[in-house]
Length: 473
Image 1 (cartoon, rainbow, N blue to C red):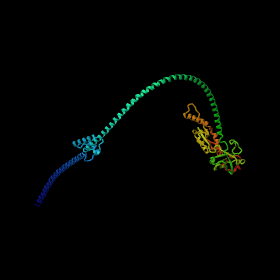
Image 2: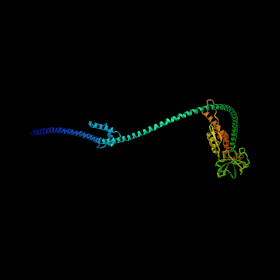
Image 3: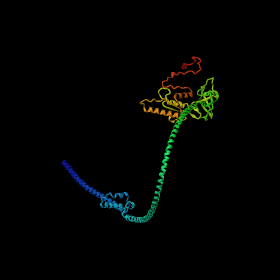
Image 4: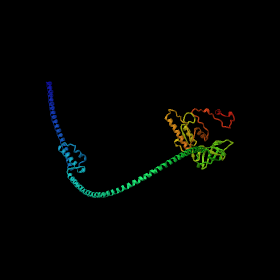
């Protein structure tokens, strides 16, 4: 009995639970339906409110546009230009905007942007009408002035016409007089032409005589020119000879000898510079080029205007010492002047087949000379050193022909200026005269063992065994 009662309770509980669950589901369904309906209603209200706001905003924009058209508010240029193309959604408002743009455009460009509205149009029209009236008054005054000026011009023209007729009559009379004078002058001219023809005949005869005489004089002048050209050539050669011997004179004298320091009578006033080398010759020598130099000295100090100190770089023989009164000279120096030398062509001083122009340039500068370009020749240039003349053969390159032509032009120019042309070997002899020791260009094939040191002339070794083996040769 107890078990049966418990089953009844369980079944009752289950039934009650099912009933509650069904009721809960039904209640949730009704609540969901009610909430969905409320949500749709609120959304519809929100959409309606948005449409109302859009409509209010659109109407506010239209009201603003109408206010600006009526002049209540100012209108910018961008807003005025947009009226012709923008659409507000209201056909009437768009039509009003287009009509406003046409009306304002019809008033012309003189309308002030601040007055672009309908209330300002009457004032603008009144002002425009007043300006036109003023312009019309000015035009009427100008027309009256022009009419008066035209009447004055017509009166002046009529007077000028009358004067012109009187002048025409006067000119006709003058013309008749000139015609009569012309006829008389023509007759006189014919007579003079006949006289001129006779004079021309005489002049022609005289001209022929004068031409023969002038031809004779021209022949004599040509002969004289030829003779003078020959004389000029002789003088050029003489000048060239004189220029060649210009430096071959003693430039100074030894004034004092103190041990190996020599004083000479040349200094700053003579533009002497340190490093110049002089040959010392006997005081009795007359031609310095033929005299045998007894010693060589180098300027080491410039003391006064005409006083310098030198050192002996090539000592004289004991039998012929340097004494006061001995003469000094250098082929590469003269008072106040610098020896200028021009180098032309490719110069090979050691016959090794390679150009030595730059080497020779350095030797000249080291000797105190100045190297000038062949294109800068002038009478102050002492020597022109010419290299080997290129041989012109059939089919030679244009560059070789140009070198040959340029070398000929340079030589011709040097002859005109009286510049001495010397070969490279002769210039080397001049340079060796002033060097501390004579040097010989050896070339690239020279060997040191081919040039063993030689003992100075007049000296003897004391004993063969007193010299180290390193120096026996």
